[in-house]
Image (cartoon, rainbow, N blue to C red; front, top):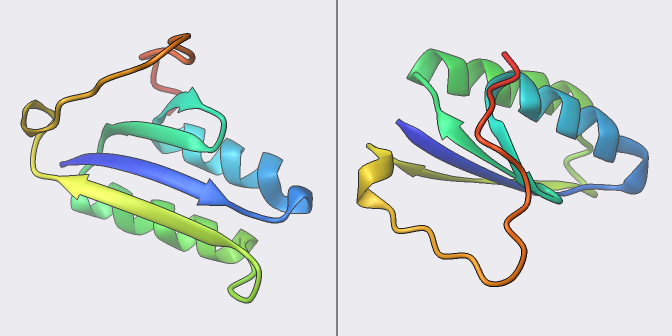
Length: 87
């Protein structure tokens, strides 16, 4: 499945969330990652993030599609990030 992860977390946890996200997904730009994951990998990603975030203060949103081909990605301005996987 193709997963897009967006997060808005307290500044104290931004780096930790980014590091966990990059273990599974490709960094796109500030607070946004994407990539192909299995259901098991997505479950591990969520479990790893749940250990870091504060449910009362932080938010992590996942957009999930069966395949990347069903999404159309459009970018305005600078195209940040890359397509490398940091697993």
